Length: 172
Image 1: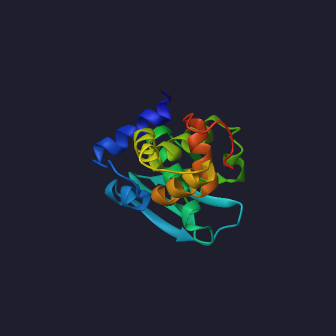
Image 2 (image 1 turned 90 degrees about the vertical axis):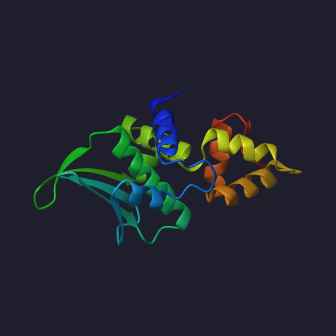
């Protein structure tokens, strides 16, 4: 199991979360991380700022609810997995951004943070348990029900089910 999966599982265990939907905004609050909705360029989903022990996640308020949930989870992944990159804001600070590049999965830290977010929002054991208790006629039905239960987009749930080996290809 990948480091990101283990970190997400550990955080859920630490905070005693065992049923969907996982609320990344609540998790951030429990971890002492302030989440601030912001006006951002459309290609920027969010950012993580760490300074002197304080952590702030900025999230693009123009994005959909599901996208904001994933972004906050992604930034929590950076918080748990990575040291951050330097950026000058008015003073030295350590920052991670989530933008169009992060979704391309070309940067190791972005791949890790995306994997963490998926494992946090749709933990393998919870997804498998939920899938076993759903009667469905098509894979689209399964994806729709699980996406709603886990508060993910259908596209994100399809990818999660494929990555877990529950689906072999896109739903239809």
